[in-house]
Length: 162
Picture 1 (cartoon, helix red, strand yellow):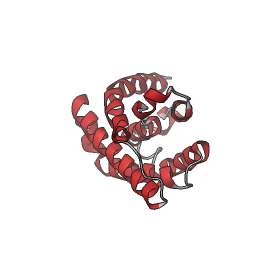
Picture 2: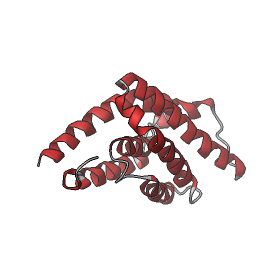
Picture 3: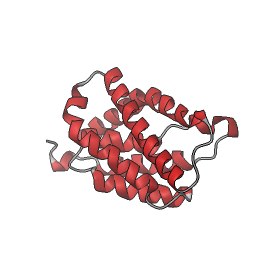
Picture 4: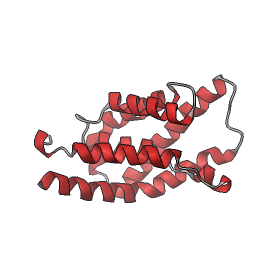
């Protein structure tokens, strides 16, 4: 368990804010399908590393904010983020010990669950995804996971030493 004084609250808030910005950043039309699921990646990382601080409630709250910023059905991203945060919370001790490539595979499965939940909700309200490209962001998210994990781990250890 992490000592309360060593929890990098500023880093957590900064990373969630940057994930929100990257999630709404305008992209060229050809690359929209490849946008990584930034918020899901950051939530999964922090639930894996600090499950007592970043939990299902934080995931739900960030999902509501993401819904409001994207103009999507309120609760769509919140439900999906809470679901994958719950799964990661149950498996975080094992995933922490996995090599990076295995944790990337687990994250890929969780991002696929996230996309499936969003796709089902959008289908229920009459807006199903219109392309196979809907799943391309899973691949880019998996490819970015080791980099995100390395960047946040360095910053986390720096914050813990202060």
